[in-house]
Image (tube, rainbow, N blue to C red; front, side, top):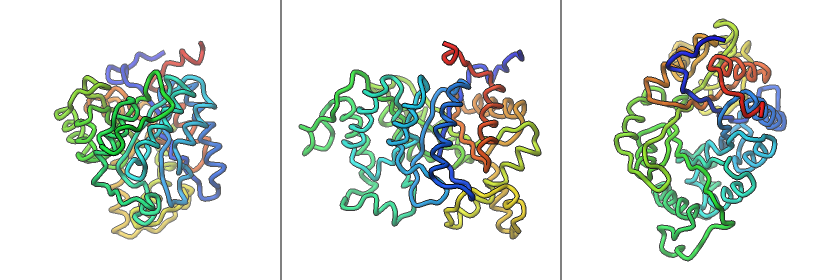
Length: 348
């Protein structure tokens, strides 16, 4: 067995799953693959399995992480399962707290509640999600405060609701994370004393300063005494660099179309490689390559380990999408082998 590198020895790996839909597939297939991937990565030694929230897109099937957390937790045994994340700006803090207190009762000690500020959709869809509510994004901090109070069975900050309690009661609250890709989300995480998950796969250029800002401004809370952070990273791992780049070509085209407002299903690599990029489109594609890691197990062990060390992280949340599910699963397998993840709980 190879000796673990210094910069990978303490790095845990977790999973972020957006339940991607391939161009020739459908939502049912994507959700079935989510369950299969969760079971497989649990056996491989991954620490968490987070389910994303997206709306109004043909590319992702995961519109309700609360439901998917329930399904994934039921299909697994010990891996932590959570939302990555619930877009709290759309919803009632009471309802979110009740959902996750219920989940904590069903799967004690295994539930994470990741919350986000981004809409996870276009503007019109976001308005439809909040239909009937005049509470805008400017109330997001208050929603965090109220949600945390409801989780802790304490009076919320909003005075008219101070007699309200979120049920059912729990002996231990879910682990709450704030997810984001900007200094604004970092500011909220720091202010409320919450762990912070930075989306490198969205905004790689600001990863270091945003994490530094979070740590510098962190205020200890009842749930966390010191700053704690991880990062979401997009990874494609394959036996050769050529295969990894081939598989990642799908994402190059998909992200390009997304930036032009086209929410498409995930294309085949051959379609992406055959696409005639204009000079401007090629610049966009090249720029987007900075927010993904593609390569062999050895190269990714070095690059991801170096990234974690540089950013002071002991956990990376890995997002992998490929057109073929078996290639996606193989990527997680190769990465687990490269980082020598502990499968002890599986053997137990």
